Length: 99
Length: 366
Ligand code: SF4
Ligand code: SF4
Image: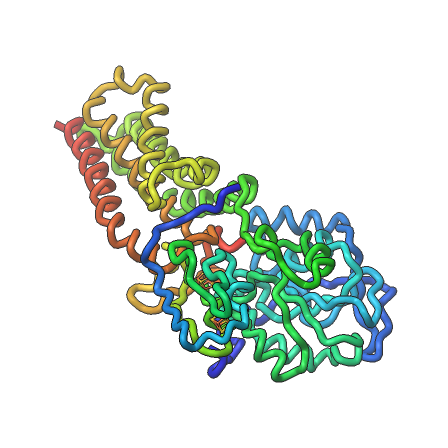
């Protein structure tokens, strides 16, 4: 099945190629295949698919990637009242998400 | 990220979960003691448990004790798989992977992999702690552990290696691909890395969304019904009941459209915003319901019909927007943008519908 996509060109994903050592971790961990290798460096190939999960940032040991993460969940954002959106799973008042 | 790693910072997570017991008499004897053993196949209570949590029953208490488990008949060369302590995560892993393995269950407060990684409870510090606590290095003769790919947002693999010597690799999204992953020299191909969201899974999560939304809408409608029973300064049960039935039908149409029907048609609906897709769908289904009910022949249908359509469309848009949290392809920036741009329309739609409903009641009083 073709990959479902959401709003494009908005993900807060910043990549500094100068710091990249070519370890390929970002390519391996990204569930959306945003990164690809181009020679000895990683490259952002599909920025629009990024879901801001943070996996690439957490696993880049060289600090080349920065992304603002948070749940892509309207209920969490509306419930946060301006504060940090937290996924409700784990609370008693959780909705059906996160099965 | 890895500086201030306090794993147990999950908000309001339950700490007093009673763990469900795994394994029976014949534990696995290792240098680190006798470990509980589980098979690949599910027994009746595993099956009933799954049905229960899928229906939303005690979902937050479906947890097993953290620690090291033997699945099948592993030896010192068998792979080590890391799992959340949500019992369903563990059960699906042993059933679908179907390989003799050691499973290191970490404490995610009974929450599944994707969500606990997002919350920070499925994290490298917790894995490091469990590796040391279970003396994993005495149980296996190698230095590899396999993590589910969807735990990567919470786990810095290099930290685990630095602090325990174990090389953490991210395996496939689905447990059924683990054997292929290992045979492939611990590499994923693109399909094994891709998160699928097939029909049955969409419907499964939307079902709970629907129940939650109906739950929230129930009492406001009871109140509405009672208020609208006051007719011509007397209490008219039938009129109020009929009206509540009609608009309750509108609300239900909206909720069912925005959850279950929406989830089924998700890949085919136009637009990127869930609220736009949901709103359109709610409008169309409402139109179909009105047509089937021959609404044009009802008294004061010039008010009732637009109210029905708007109520259904706005509730459907809102319910669908909440479905963003059930998917794995939305982003927080995107959802914030969607909320900013759609919520005013949803609220306006709901407000106009409410105004029409009130107008209709008042007109009957005159
Ligand atoms: S993880 Fe970092 S260093 Fe490694 S390839 Fe990606 S950007 Fe480069
Ligand atoms: S934040 Fe997640 S989706 Fe976006 S590029 Fe990084 S790993 Fe991929």
